[in-house]
Amino acid sequence: MIANLFRSLGIAPMTTPNVSNPTVVPKPVMRHTVTHPRAGSDLISLIGFNDQAFPISLPAEPWAEKLGERVLALPSRIGGGSTNIASALRLALEMTRRCPKGCRRRIFLLSDGEANVNTHDTEPAAQAIADAFINLNVIAFGEAANSTLLKKLAAKTHHGKFIPVDGLHAMASALQHGGGPVQAKRQHRQETALICIDLSPSMGSRDMQNGQTRIEAVRDALKSLITYKSQVWG
Image (cartoon, rainbow, N blue to C red):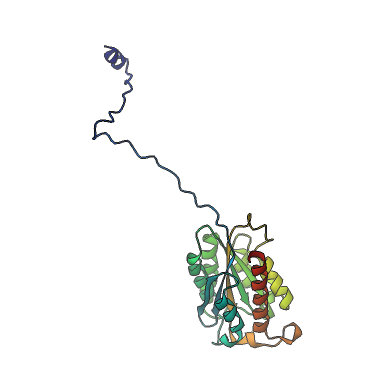
């Protein structure tokens, strides 16, 4: 009778599910999955480019033996005849997919000149990095130190930086601090630095401080970065 009264008032009575009836299946509870920031040692990856980009080292901890060996061998990798920055940026973006989930990703472009091949693809490649919410920091030396194009590439990404340098120490400092100050280990989100290195013939020019070639300065700056990261995370 009470049920009939509720129905006459337009009120549906509350019913208790019959748990003994196997046909009654409770609805699953939907939960939102959150990807938490990943903690741990920073990683370093190396990409070379001249006519085309090519991987030199996949993301590795700074004390990885192969990473150190490949940094030392950089002067022997100079070749080609052009500077394909678009290819380097596309490969760097592709390699970010190999980074651990929850890891911050930053791309560094080290170049001594303007892109002179696939130039129509260069800005779209930087825009794709921006669309993926990844920083692009450009470290420029030689003719590139006053490059309007390289400044524009860095400016496309959130907090991207254009950093002109004239020698080893300035280059090492730019690599170490391009991602901002390092916090305490327990507070620092793991980061992968994907470093694109110009290996076109002009990188053999001996016009850096202390009589170094440009690629020798890059090599030694990367050695300094590895030492720095190893001290922070070792």
